[in-house]
Amino acid sequence: MTDELQEKITWQNINSSKTKGKILTGNIIAIETEKMKDTNITCAIVDFKGIKVLIPATEIIKDGKNDKKLLRNMMGAEIKFIIIEADKISNKAVGSRIKAMERIRDINLKKIEVGDKVYSKVVGVWKKYIRIECLGMDFIIKAQDLQYGYVEDVSKLYKINEQIKVVVKEIDEEKKNIKISIKELLEDPFKNIRKDFTEKGEYLATITGYTDNRHLCKHYARSGFGLYSSNLVR
Image (tube, rainbow, N blue to C red; front, side):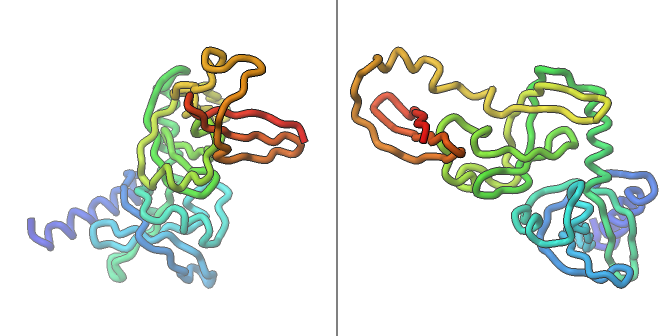
């Protein structure tokens, strides 16, 4: 395929996205501040087959702010978007991830059922939580809801674009939302704790971490039997 033909097809896809809502895919490769209608807008930059696509931070997620904090933790993420403006002369376009996600969500809400197991994708990683997209919806999953036991740094366990299986727990068609769980698909290491320990028994263990929650302090100890937790009221 010649470069000229490739460029022609690329612009056909961009125009189809703008006029018909075709969903396109690309990776966030940079963060820039662009002037749009006399306002400085923070944008995620996606290289769509040689075309620079600007996606304002406010078009990445609902209630998104015009700053770089969110985008920094989404660098490299593969996202879906719909073109809302395009200029062939400058070889640029402006897109919206929110519009693409809404289309995907509306399609999937008609198909899914409670109990379905589906794959989600990591699109943002922080120390204490990750952002995943699933069936056209965004979810913030905190460390305690990702795994059993103590997780000191979530970013060491999950990477951008990693696939994670989840189970659909609830579906609210009126609010166009669902509840999902990652943890419920994992084996609970505390389920059969009584077979390894006896009341008033004494065991050699090492404290590997703890979390604070007001007056409750949870310690995680690793013994020869595995990783377990104990609660102490302060």
